[in-house]
Length: 502
Image (cartoon, rainbow, N blue to C red; front, side, top):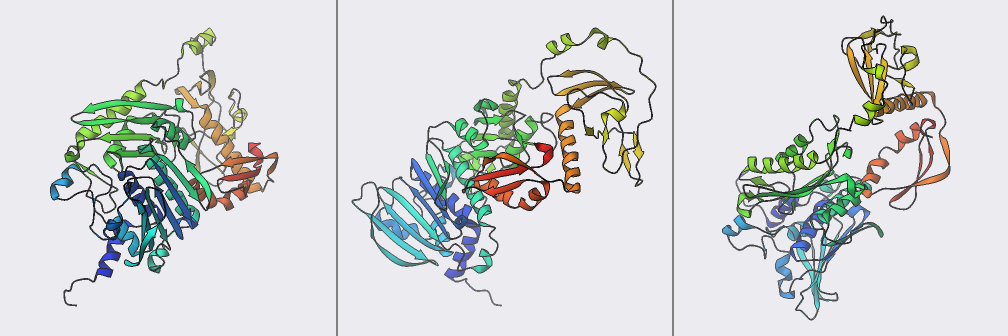
């Protein structure tokens, strides 16, 4: 085909594809606009996970009536005027694409009243074209309603996930900005039910504790660390407060929520050797750098940034987290434990001749009694890997075996100290107990053991994102023996559990 200029409609849809990916993208753009407008209270409302309806209302400075048509036009902004302004951006939004891009793939209703205005005004745009404008009624501030997102572009709409999944993503966005702006009151309502609310007290640590559902004393403050114009502050969880994914580590650069591999790597390296494999730290890390040393214009959705001095940022973040962890006692004190052990523990006992270890079947489990060992408090079936020692089971598959061990003592109710043919063995008691329960749970699942009904059903509170994850695993949980019923939007009723968990 010959080279030609694309039509306005096509370019608008292409721009919308860069900015608007799903309902959470819309909420992110609108919340950023509200924060830039100086809002102290922001309310987000969703219908059908945002696929049918989104409304973001704020009490910010508002938009004058004469500027409403410009507000929904492409490349129209009040946040910069020249190229030099890009080097000293202090606002979250700046391109002037958000409202125009949202209006290109939905019906957008913008109602606003400037602080100095005597009345409010409203403009309605659908498919990028203005269809209505006139006076309206509301207090100072702005409300943006988005209806039928992607309904005019079915190819985009089919890629949206379930209602619960999309609501969960929106919950993450609102929670993130509630962390970055703790002095602002945030509220999220999903299908008319409140899913999140913050007090606006100004303490990010309190908001983080509420989001993680953990005691505040489980969070370590990052003392403000400065290095080469880079300042770092925030809070991170103690090593025992970890998660199986990275999504509970929030990173903000000049209060902008971003994804940055260098910052995340600095935090993870500070936790190295303190977390088990597959576990990730939690927390909120604020990085503040001069505006001219960070480029926020490297990603269409402003989700990434680029630093002029990456090494300085990495070093400042690592140092802040490392110092915070050093102030937390990771290794338990052994004085009281050692003094309570019998004196013959410290002698050099003569080990008995190693007895042949029993074969381990396909289940990979063997009881401590069969091994001749003695496990304090929590006996049961377990399997412990041991390099270089393996036997063959009935299916000719190698399985690890445990030698005969002599229990010397226990540390902090967490580690069992034993002695065996090859020296000292440290057994993580909690990990062993988890493996025992896991093996029993699998055995019950294979045997079809009936679940144990609870005398009084337990009410479990969840957020929209947790609910979405749980909803996708209901069949598996039912097979395991969990009987779960919905109980309101953010609550579940647990009626029965597997017998091993009673």
